[in-house]
Image (cartoon, rainbow, N blue to C red; front, side, top):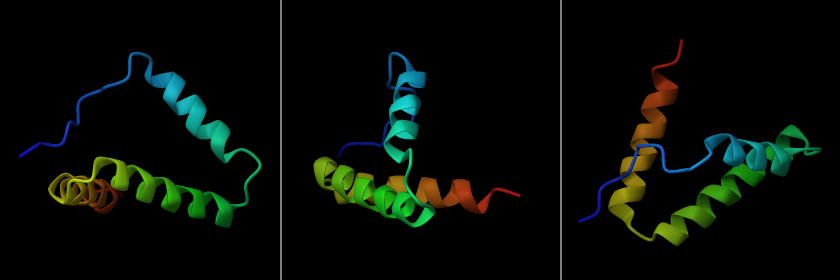
Length: 68
């Protein structure tokens, strides 16, 4: 069974962030949310391991719930 890699995995993390921001440029808030949803589905399909996806979903949810 694979485990979720939560360690930095980009040689230059700022490059990824720049690409992500550029992908959202000139989109409405609604379009931006829809793009994020499409991206999640595309990447989940690419991963194809429900255990890893469940782990990632829980970690992401925990991050949001622990804010504020």
